[in-house]
Length: 219
Image (cartoon, rainbow, N blue to C red; front, side, top):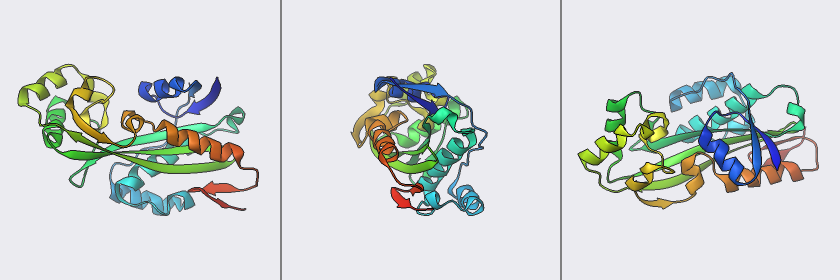
């Protein structure tokens, strides 16, 4: 079983990695997440990081958070182990929907998503042997039309309270979904196929330098 450092306390991301026989070792990050594209743009300018140059809007929010969390957790060489971080957001109607503050907030989110499509975006950052990659994966999810009682009953389970968009597709929240276009794992919180490809990209690179957005820049 491969060992990987995971800068996330999410049990869903841990379980996804275990699913592909990778053993995650949880590490803490000192990075303070950004919440809005405006805040992300200001932080992007301050960081001046080549990995973030092509990202804007909601994509920048999750890409910057993923990279920041990865770099905030990095210490020394991590015993030569790859370090993974991710950030998942839900966007709809030009809004970013984070985790609900309380049950009323969760209710408003679910009523807003009812009967419409939204996008789930996960920024993923991988650091390994002095090199790095950042990607953003997008999945489109459509909710069926929900009744007030269905929303009330779902909130009563407590499941929505720690999840972006106020639902968990891997749990009872799957009953809210009409269709999905893209990676299911991405909606859970970590696009496994993408992460596997990133790992191969970094592990197989034989040169010297840093990988920026799947381009090798020699330094």
